[in-house]
Length: 253
Ligand SMILES: NC(=O)c1ccc[n+]([C@@H]2O[C@H](COP(=O)([O-])OP(=O)(O)OC[C@H]3O[C@@H](n4cnc5c(N)ncnc54)[C@H](OP(=O)(O)O)[C@@H]3O)[C@@H](O)[C@H]2O)c1
Image (cartoon, rainbow, N blue to C red; front, side, top):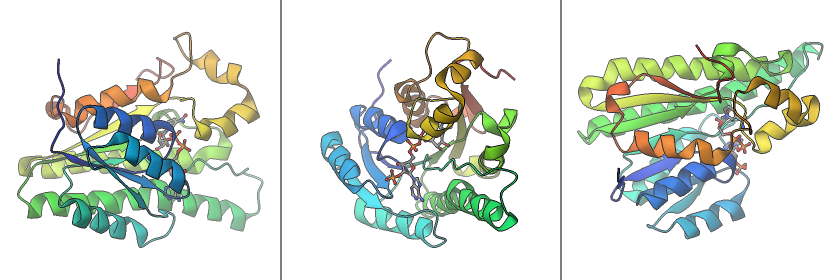
């Protein structure tokens, strides 16, 4: 099966490293032009855009700030002319203990919701408006998490809750806008070997993460990217609204 994404502009948030970088690489290999979004890792993002080719470009935005998501979408669509696919991948997983002072606990909750859910939702809103205005079909892929279904440890409750919100946002978009040619998918990884997972690994150990899974090795970013490329191709369009689990059978539901 041959996947050709040439002529498609795809915005991938959080593409400077980890899963977002692997997704961007696979999409560009299939011919897509990628808007490589980053927050702090400017050098990595610019290098990646250069390596990807196909006129890919890097775009900065801090998605913990309320206005940045909308502005990011506008900048990318202006510079690239159009956006056909949005991949909401950027996220944070910051721990806070239940015994932390209330102010600190709420700060963690609000920052997590802003990056992982509110900014992703604003990007979805902008994408839907963009697709409808252009009378073009479009796809949205939201990178969620196994934690949305299984829950997480007490230090990461805000993370799990943000990802559960993203799942229902995605299915609502699929149900509401399918007739206008818009498809939306959730992808829910389990534990994936990236910087994000490192904090958990430092705290609980790699063996703890491995104990959960049915396969021999931990999932890596390269194990997620081909599925996203397949979804981007349109061949999975009749699965719109679905969640694709990629968790090495650590949580089967
Ligand atoms: N790793 C896992 O075990 C795992 C499991 C389930 C789901 N996921 C999901 O998979 C996705 C990618 O995770 P990952 O493990 O690849 O994470 P990662 O290696 O920590 O990368 C996170 C990306 O998000 C960007 N980002 C972080 N804070 C941001 C902010 N305030 N504004 C804008 N961008 C920001 C980072 O940009 P800069 O580096 O440029 O600042 C980076 O590109 C996330 O949605 C995550 O929840 C991961």
